[in-house]
Amino acid sequence: MTARGGVPAPQRAFESAMIRSIALAAIAGALVAAGGFYALSSSALRYNVAAQAPAPDAPANAVTENWPICTTMNAMGSEADLSGLDPDFAAGKKALGADDWNGAIAALKLAALRDPRNADIQNYIGYAYRRLRQLGPAMGHYQQALAFNPRHRSAHAHLGELYLVLREPSGAERHLAALEEICLIPCVEIGDLERAIASYKGAVTR
Image (cartoon, rainbow, N blue to C red; front, side, top):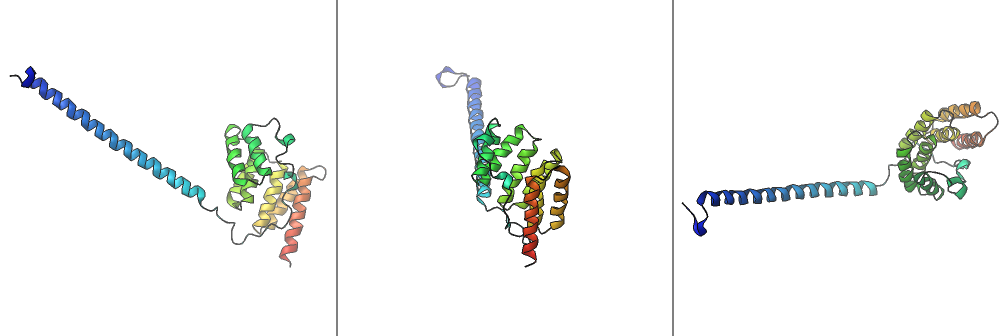
């Protein structure tokens, strides 16, 4: 038995079934693609909302830093300071020098991917978080710097100052003692932390 046009009925039925299968597969593919696009768009929207949300404040019991913050950071971003560095490390330090704390964190974290045990990078990330008043991440990165290099003077000074912000002067005193053991002669980090401790004590006794 043949259908119209001389095409056998079984062949025509087979072709119709194939066309229906192809159409169903195309519809299913479109639905999957649409679902994936929706999920991706929703994820991107959530990321953008999170990125634009205000950073968490410092704890309620934290104090305002009314001492000069780390004189060792003064040369940050100078050409001499950036020469020969990994490009992202250099960009991060330049951002620190420009008080661009978020930009510094982004660049330094990229540098850390290539040099994951670099104590300087961790210390600088901690410094940027501290200037953003995000004290939890700041402490985590300072501690990571000291895990990589227990004699890292700047990380000791920064972490000591952070303890003062948290109203924990005993922590600052511990890091001052550590610096006194590390520095065979007086170093700028000792002076920075001593001034911060003196300023803190003067403020709390008023």
